[in-house]
Length: 222
Image 1 (cartoon, rainbow, N blue to C red):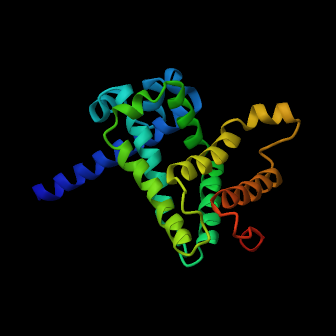
Image 2 (image 1 turned 180 degrees about the vertical axis):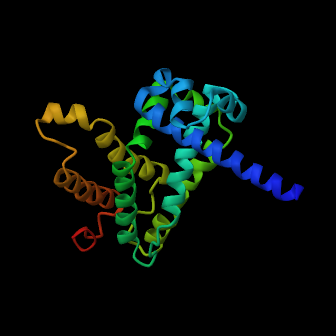
Image 3 (image 1 turned 135 degrees about the horizontal axis):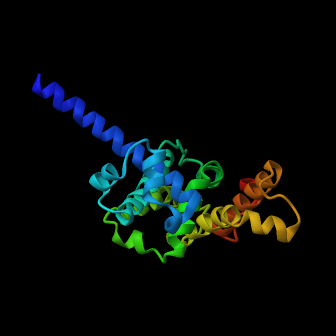
């Protein structure tokens, strides 16, 4: 009977912690780090401040856990991709599309990253998990590039880090700046047609960036 009770309590504790974490993602994405008040997070989580401090220690440690959580969620979603390494060009296109669509469907991911950059990566540096999590993200790209190199359709001098940064920046910048860019350009960049046009453009751009001059881009892009 005691074991069962302990199991129930552990489950309840996990649920409470998860609710606080999800609430923190929502509040920080909406109000920023400075504006994300502990009492607001507790209210959204239908919990109380005491529980927040019990599970996370401080607001700062909670934000670090939020960073780890959103990267973990991204990696889990990315890990479900079924990419055919026999067709590396297509696999690369599918990876670009996944990253792009994830940013579009998860604006909280973009918002939290923007907030952390405003704080110069302070919380990311405090995390013991961020290196592992970022390594997993780059790890999905590596076999695609290596397969393309083995088949002679990708350049041999590719820096994996540069390809990762190229994809991440092309997907992130559009989404993190779409409101100001929409004003500057006089077009609604949140429009689905605009988003699909950009995805097609950056997919072609990434492929052109990794293919050698001796390989025709036409067969892999069209």
